[in-house]
Each structure stands twice: as structure tokens, then as C-alpha cells.
Length: 155
Image 1 (spheres, one colour):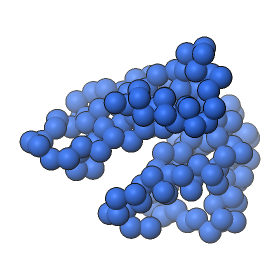
Image 2: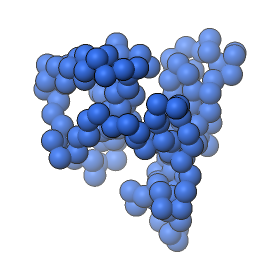
Image 3: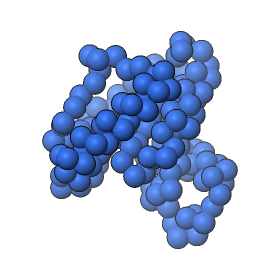
């Protein structure tokens, strides 16, 4: 799918969320064309990897081998560093870019059963990350309301 089309990233992310839905929040996080698989130990990770790779093959979704990273001790993902010690914020200068002039900004946002997340980009460079855990009352929201909540949070 050519990502130059206006709605292509949103359509592709919707496809990936639908395909991976049974495993989301259990051991998979999807953001556009990035898939993060996490596990408690190596044996579980092996099974989780096998499950997702078989799922992608079954759905005829293919990943470039050069873009794949396996068995990482830590990973940078959506503005965070995730390792065996937990999730840590990543907001250092080399990762974030400064806005350039009046060029258009693009905001991506999403909701999960745990929180809201948003990224502001300009010319495919990350300008800012934001995330927030759901408040108690938000945990009862329907999927539609969660997605709207993510939009409100992002703006």
C-alpha cells in the first residue's frame, strides 16, 4: 500500500489492528507498520513470535526481512524504552525533531484498553510523543468512545 496517499496510514493501521486483535495488549502492540511482540521469558517469546508470524503469513501480510529485529533486550517504541525493568520515557534530543516553518503537521492517535497515545509528526520526523493511562471512568468507555477520547487527548 503506498503510504503517500492521505488515508493510507490510517487504513493500514486499522487493518493491522483487526488482524492482530486477538493478541493486542496480551503480547502485541501495533503502530502503523511496526509490530512489537513482548513476553515474560524466552520460551513464551518463541511461541508469541511463531503465533504472529503465522498470522501474518495466513493474512498474506509480509514484512521486509531487513526491518525485523528479534530477541532484543530493550527496544525504543513510540517514545519509550521498553526493557526487562519496565517502560521508561524517551524524550532526548536525537529522537525528537524541531518543527520546520509552516509545513503541515500530522497527528496520529490511538486508544487501547490501557490508555491513549499520540504522535505529532512533520515531514515524517517525530516532533512530539504523548501518552496517558486511562482514568477509572474511561475504562468503561466503548471502543468508539475510546477512539474519540484519543482524538481529544491528542488535540
